[in-house]
Image: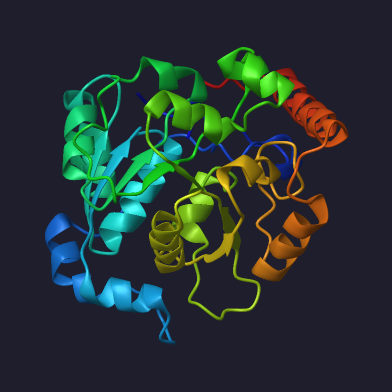
Length: 305
């Protein structure tokens, strides 16, 4: 998602007026040292974990190398949780690793350059920077990343508060992640764009917990999407297949599921009710919804970087 996602001060306002791009200032602090996390790598399940889902097999048998490009709220929240789960996480921003000492201390991730995060993220790469900065990434940033490595995009379009108007997104000819995919030159999987950062840290629950929050996962590569969905489950959320990247408009800002923390049955029902092909009326409606939210945020003095 949202070089770094928004780092504005914490703003207290109603849920309906705040975007999943987190508004909490700073990064939540991990209670475990790097050494403790290594020692506890075999316990990478939120207690009390039960069941035999593929995700449980994944977390019991594999430590992943994960590169996170973007050290804002979503990137830092993912870094914290993934290191807590025993994975090796490399995190980068646009200003260089020397500016990420605090993030290293709080998350347990290793601060590196964006190029190094891509190189070391052999199992998974997360691109979580403001949408407007996507074109500024080095054109060959992902050249060394194995073709089978999933690339996650968490971005959201905020034309008033941050990104300026982007023609393809205004007309609806592309979804946000299709636009990102074009610039990155690699297939992407869209997830983590519609959940608050502190919910990633605080609200994960074991599989089977009633009311467990679900996250929509959209993409065109079935194998990549399955691997990402397993990681979502490992983090403590139900992963719902949200279709292709072209259908990811259903989880963008202004839609009913954006920031709503729906359980899986409600999310599937919502996605089905919207259909798969976005109509012109739907596009106008959701743009208008989002514009109202942005205006309300602006009226409260909220700024996105």
